Image (cartoon, rainbow over all chains, first blue to last red; front, side, top):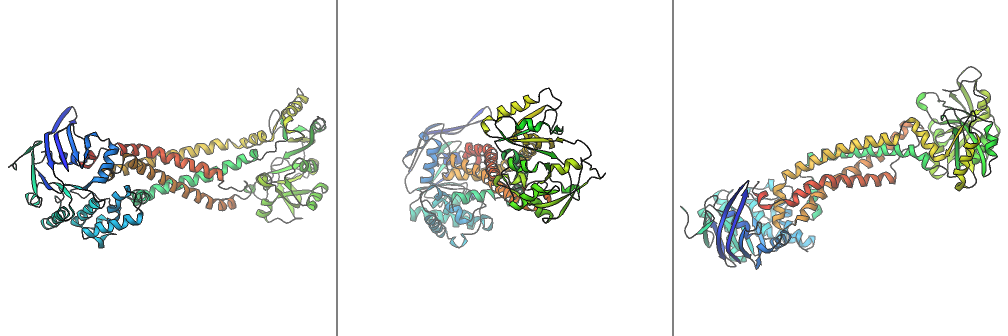
Length: 225
Length: 387
């Protein structure tokens, strides 16, 4: 599913070039659930952005779901993301003026589905995360855990093969976090979704089938202490 | 949900701010509707002018009288069908606020050169034969509830009469109505006979304000106009002959260049709307950068995001602008009631709607373009990281 070869990424900040990733090689097979761990500033989110097609590498090759992302322009990347990736963020990033169902429907606006079909699929996705009864509620009327469930429904509604999650439980209490992680685990095990999850939290990482550690832009074998 | 729903939801994300901005736009376009109606009325005389009519005035000034002795010489020019004449009387009815145009005219000739004036045969007969007869436009009759046969006293502001007063009394013999587009020219006027006026006034006997010349062939209008002016060149009363349209425009411009004044006010109003809307949209877009980044993350293309922002801007202007023009349409009948016959009935014309629509789209695109381009160029990772 994911194959990274000699991937480097650096940013220009003012006059300085800051190297974030150095020659990263990584393979993630289809159906895997990977926890990407490491201290702040180690390049976890940058790596996740590259895999999710949100950013382009400075050097190297990023092949995800059969596409070489470094060769795609912004329009092609947008189409590729819509078809292949679901995104889950730490702060949910729901649109506050839309209901839960409309938020979930958003990715389907880019498909050829009819309005009725879109609505039906959004309701199925909300049922999957246990929030069908909150479909008409706006994000402000939901708890943090419920908002994240809506975000997960939005991520899976177009049935992507890959889910990328950036600290999905970073803003939640332990119990709610475990519920969300359990949900992700179910999506991985029962629905075959490949999941790459950035987290600081070792307990969260235990829900994944394997852990990958990053330190100063380089993949390491063992957790950094 | 559709892209349209998403657009509307974005627009009303901050309901209070959007409603206040909408209110400003509604007010601006309501003002536009009212002012444009005034501008159109002031230009209507020119637009409805007969192509086969020439107006002869003094070369010195519109208010300088011409001798009636010129009439047969103009009449004798080949290609001239009929010549009528008129004097601006400037009378007021009961109160100065009740101003309406009132003219002393040569009755038979006036009706001959203005075939678009509609009146009954009985009214025509009386106007042609009764010395004190007056014809009132239907708007005046309605406004003052005049009855045929009623005496209409006018207070002259220019011409005192031989009785030593300014009060002139006329007998209303009926109503007249302009045909089709010429309604605004005649329905608010009062006409009375020149012979009664000339005998009654203290001074300037045997003079007229202007002649109206009907030519047989409109294609010869320019040549005949030059002939008339040549005829009186170097005389005591040199003339200036122009088309009725040019004359009407010159007449209106006595009150000031209404078109320019209205355009200046509208330009100031729309400039304010432009700044206000641009500021509101720019503020709204700044607040929504993370949301726009989320849309891009989900796969919305740069073009779609740009279109959504631009669409919000145009929709805001269309909602406010159409609301404003509807408000103007509803307000004008009440305003017409207040104005009475001082001006012909004001209305929001199809032309004003079209112009208004073009302005809405223009401002919408102009103010929407900068934030739309910013949204299009937005880098997802920077926006999500709040950089």
